[in-house]
Image 1 (tube, rainbow, N blue to C red):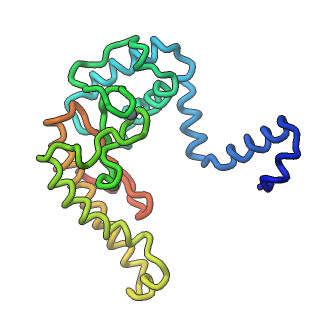
Image 2 (tube, rainbow, N blue to C red):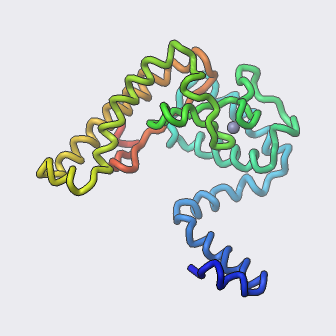
Amino acid sequence: MPDVKGSFQLGSWAYASIMLAMSNSLESPLDRLWKEYGAVFRAWDDLTLARWMAQTLGQIEGRVWRLSHPLLGAYRLAAQLAHDRQIWFKRLATAPSAYLEAECCRAPLLPLFTRDILETGLVCQHCGETCVAYDDMPQELQDGVRQWAKTYGPVHAVAHWDDAQRKRVGDYDSRFEQAATEAEALLAVAGGQIVPKFLDFYPASIWEDQDECLEVRPEDIEV
Ligand SMILES: [Zn+2]
């Protein structure tokens, strides 16, 4: 990494090239893969993109979805591009009427439930920001969500224990495995019992069906 003082002495073109190379190297292989997947949507004009999204929102309405579902993956790619292009401001297509406008970016409200729900609230699929803060969630949902998150927190934390904590349990590997098994069960509760209740308030909802820190994959969670 060039030190900042040195880089000011470079010509602006050279400096820009270095910054670009740095930002590319910061991008993970997975980011690059998703960028490649997203190329199909980048080739579409605004109207085509807006219509596809409005139609897809109609098709996902009325259900709870895994984050890993390919249709939702495709929608998320389109949604992020649409956010960059400010598609929903242009009013090129109308989303199904059941979707309210998200306060964060005024796209249709499509919330994602994650294990960080108490801190980040429900996450917008369009801009990636909080679309509904925990405190702003319907009261009927808050208690169940809080209880779940309070149970999940210590289980997840096992993945981030420091050396002293790991030594204290002796066999950390089996403790990690135990935490992963508990996480699988808790995520199944989230997807099977908690998030379905969201359908009383939102036309469709998504839940994060993985925990990368505990190496829990979507296929490990049976709902
Ligand atoms: Zn948003």
